[in-house]
Length: 609
Image 1 (cartoon, helix red, strand yellow):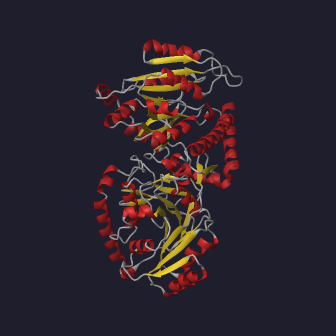
Image 2 (cartoon, one colour):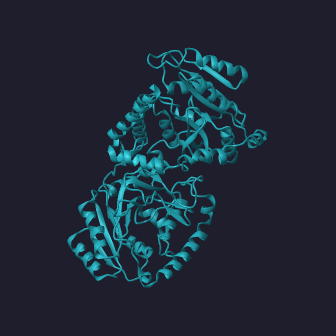
Image 3 (cartoon, rainbow, N blue to C red):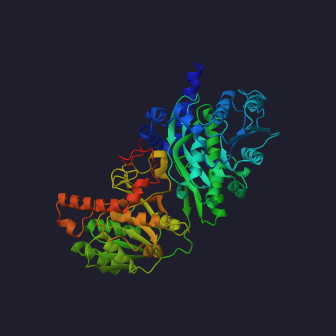
């Protein structure tokens, strides 16, 4: 009875805290997220298809790699329950890759109100027992109060490994974790290797909430610590970063990951769950306080990262717990060239142009409208805007009426180095959209920057695309309502993608010229995706700004000969373009989209197994 009462009280407190933070709508969004996310089926999926059996583990133990780097696993022990401590140590001892050392630093101490389930000297007794069995285990007791960063730094100084891994004192590694790391290190000399992870029930019997991560995404890392565990880092990089910083205790892993991302040259993601994070044994009131503190420390770490790397901007919390929002400054507020490839009807034209002047906060732009002249009423409206606005230029276009031709022609008229392409059926939804996109584009590591396209029901149309998913490509987060949670809440974070629609796309004019403009071989949205993939091959990032919201109004636009085609004819033309696209980007299909985890089904872009 008492246990049931405790459960109900904790559940109620969780709901109350969620309402305080995000309101009733936020709670409902979270409920829908939990219902629609990868749920109960994951435990069986992992155990049946991905948990290695004894035959595989035996084969791994018999493999001798050409390179066998020593991997030091550092653990800060603090009042760890005996059963959890044993499971953590044994998860290391049963690794199929043998060249490791486990370095434990024990900061346990009796703390009033926190020691009910802990006996002084318990960790020392347990660890000494295992040290007698395995000489690869090292142990040090810290006398006096010290934080987790200090303890990890002491463990690092006691270690000898070529690579360093961090393991929480109550979590466990899968038995093949270090084998998988060693395997990729034999393929290439990586600076950082990280894997997927999941949650494990308190009793260690059930797995849930997998975190299937993308390959390295700098913008996602600047939103939250998606890398987390398992992360294995070359020793020299830890030394160069000078280890953990105590002033960021609570977000020490995040601070380290941010700093390492600046100096690491080669980063490898293993799309496999190699780390189980234990949940459920900490009382909810303690957990809530810890989370709030952690959030503040994460914000502090990200602000420090921006300042230390000369990235002008600020950081703020979002309604989604754990997701940070980077808003970059636009030093000098440079003029940008907004290029609208005209078309559509008069209603779409008004909804595209008016908000640029009446709603958007960023006002330093020239507006170039390339008018194909297919609708007299729309053309007349463009001319009225040109007459009323000094920064608007309307140019009649008489060439091939395809989107690539119109955009490329528009660039020849642009006087500025920052270009924003807008389709004539796209309208500013969020007043800060242009400024936030420009701020990101002005950073040195920027390439293409886009926002989120919503329909008139406030549902996502596209938030970047995944290549080779759902056929040729899939629009990510399609159908999710604005503000609701998608998988891992990724739709509420800035992130990198392989490709994006150019319906609202920013790029430097200099980079546009290097790319040779949009390919005029494509009449469909494949023109946009081809442009993005060529940018990626040139080393440019494709970034989606979550708060840069745009709205698609009035449906799609047919151009030129498309207007006279039947639905069947348009479908045949689309198939021809898809065939060409698939030939041009066959190598991308073979590798798989780096930002859409290999564990997800390729049938759709819904982040499902």
